[in-house]
Image 1 (tube, rainbow, N blue to C red):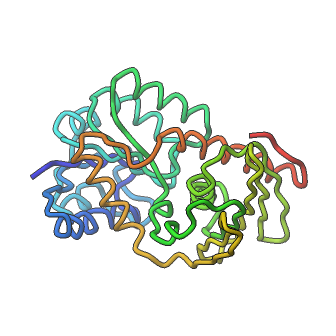
Image 2 (cartoon, rainbow, N blue to C red):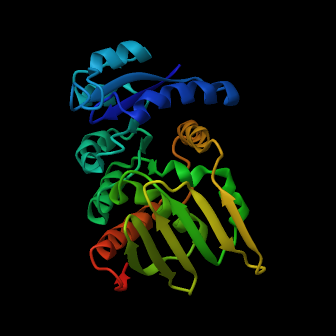
Length: 281
């Protein structure tokens, strides 16, 4: 059995509570043999539900490590979680990436592009293969939008800084052209972010807490298409993570797109504070 180590800010949170189950399901589909064998968290008690790290490990059959270094030494592969606390990713990565083991870092990859660049520099220094993505990038509906030129993406979540990564990553992955500037217009809880790429493609990113995720766009042939995102994108993500581990770090997409997502996110959050003004990416 190949051993995965979970690194988290606190263990009992939605991603850590679901990933082990999804990995088991994907193992059955792919005929692989990965298990969450080790775990470590900075906080012992989850602020979500009061579950301790030891209680979480007992529930999921993992061994609790006394230090991050111990987890890195024992694990074959590493997953850095803390999905709601991206400011923890760089401090964790400073230890994790030096071990050179294939690593997945959960969304949001970094709180800003500066820390994103630092993590890429660390990975290059230690020769460590890693990738990061929003699970929404793995939605099978996106396959219907290859060659899209003009795009509308909707999505929700409890707050823009944490959940904007989903709609931004969808747009970056589909447009395949660097975004050069963004502009935000807001009305009550709704956010409309206009984006333009270097070659003239456009996107409107629509955010509101209650929105479902959807994509609409104009294809290269001029035809329009709209899809609600309902596919099992987390299961697809688990498969991509396992394939990444199986291939010892063969990337599922160009890692440069992760840096692009972080630069666009910086601009989007700046535009949120400077309404109706074009912000350069």
